[in-house]
Image 1 (cartoon, rainbow, N blue to C red):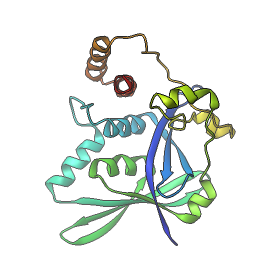
Image 2: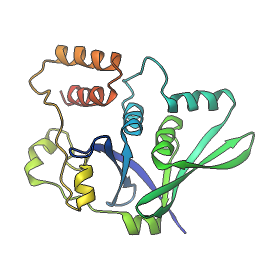
Image 3: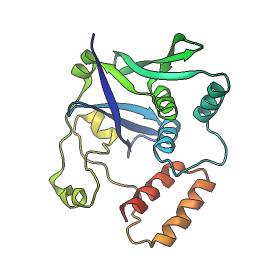
Length: 209
């Protein structure tokens, strides 16, 4: 079976299911997206890895794994989402140490959080993408936002994934009225409080400015 490389398109949240998030993966050489429902902790860990400028005061679990692996010369070479059963994705970490390759079973959310930290590529099999891949429709009402550098496909509500009605997600907080100085203070406070989800949204607003 042929492998298809994936990139991370974005993360969204559920407005009705507490602690539920959606990770959207995009095929590199195509337009299909692979939505995966993940937990809050994993979403936070992935968001931190994506936002290079947000640094937790203490290492998170996936950071600890990376530090441990570095100390013992273990490298995660790639992640493969290799199975889909009853809506659950199964993944493997392809690791190497002293020229010996090992395959380790992992939850897909954990595997992707580690792939980001090791800068390892993410793959799935073509038959999985054929089965679970979707095309996201762009909301024409978001055209103005697209022109300002944001992509209305970047986030999809978990509720919409589960219901089959895919709509662009709406941000929880409106930071548009805040000044850059206020945003930086809010960012610092969010990081100190270890509210990395909020910090990521503030960082997005700063980047748009």
